[in-house]
Length: 280
Image (tube, rainbow, N blue to C red):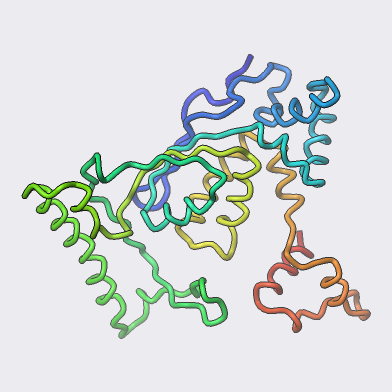
């Protein structure tokens, strides 16, 4: 048997955060499944219906691609990962919305929280075409702008709030009350356990052009870890990315001349989806 995770895989993220893979299932695989790595569990789960197991690499790889393309998701749930994550609280709150994972976070009721703040090096203006997105600009670099001074004051107040938090604790106020005014840019730590199928859904949403920069940094690092441990599944994931436009919508947009498409009927997001779909 071979161990595919000989030691934890650690990736630094943002200025003080990290993503660390500390355990996975399967961790040990048959020696003849080395090229499949954790993908071997997908094959075994799929073939148990026929009372069969691993065959050869090419056949097993074709099976994984078939399963992924045709959305046979349950075999991918047989691969599981446990991460240790350090991230700003506002990112953790986005992360915990993925309810198919299991979480356990450091508690401000039991522990005195560390003074570690996330201060972004770039801040963007609000997008005018999307209620949740930022533009790709940097207000900190604009000449004769009041934004840098205002933002520095804003982040400085985070440190002021932490100092008051410590003073409250030093004066006998309970930890659970002292913490209530702490800022969202403080770092928190949590354990995150999830299966491969739902982790790919997390990556699809959080490593996209529509995700916030900070959580995208974590999702990119997770995706890079998976490329080494689940190479065939990750290849299938890349080859079978889909868009929200239906086949009928795409057909209606297709123009007769030069086999081109009429993008003018789409909003900005749909235009990007169609472009990526046609060029992948």
